Image 1 (cartoon, rainbow, N blue to C red):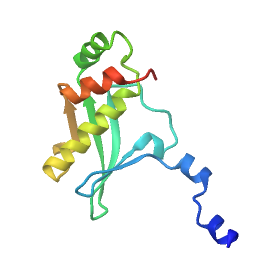
Image 2 (cartoon, helix red, strand yellow; image 1 turned 60 degrees about the vertical axis):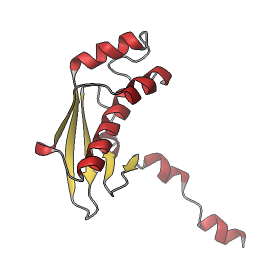
Image 3 (cartoon, one colour; image 1 turned 120 degrees about the vertical axis):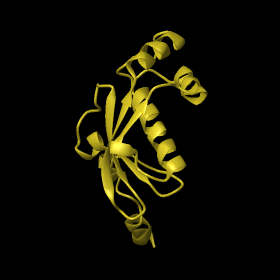
Length: 131
């Protein structure tokens, strides 16, 4: 019996190498392209995600954060969330997921711009740990 339960356990090494995958309620899967490539997170203001729809069609979607949002949030968080902080990856990913859920389609031109922060963005940033 013990052998069977050990075979059903996920391999921890596989979990370490698999990219984070966020799935929306309407079936879109969002993957961090740099994790698929085994690269470091991008330091820039544009994040590229691989998005797969429910029919397994894939597109690379660029999510760009407006420059002025970095300064706004740096002031609101008293310097805890700076431009290179991992918070911005999650913010871009959340805005993309919201867009895909609300429109049930890819953004035009495979690009999405985040030009303002909503209250959830601000509250999340205030609670965000350094990193």
